[in-house]
Length: 109
Image (cartoon, rainbow, N blue to C red; front, side, top):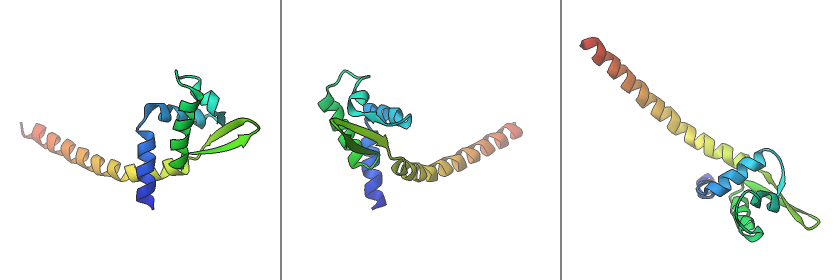
């Protein structure tokens, strides 16, 4: 289940427009129309992006009158961050080893 969540999260995050929409939602709830505003896209185009974010569990949408309001659901981002965190530790270890090797080389000269 976590693997499937990660797949849909990273697929949704692969698009720069969707990443920007998430950044906008980090500041608070917005309508689909407000999310579309900064881009040269139709309401329908923005709604498609929101639907992908919603299927990935990154956004929750609710109806208020005629408006669709969206809010960020950060739990899936936390799962992705936790998964990436394991690779951060891996690369930090590799970089530490490289630093030590370079320091040993410099001392040997």
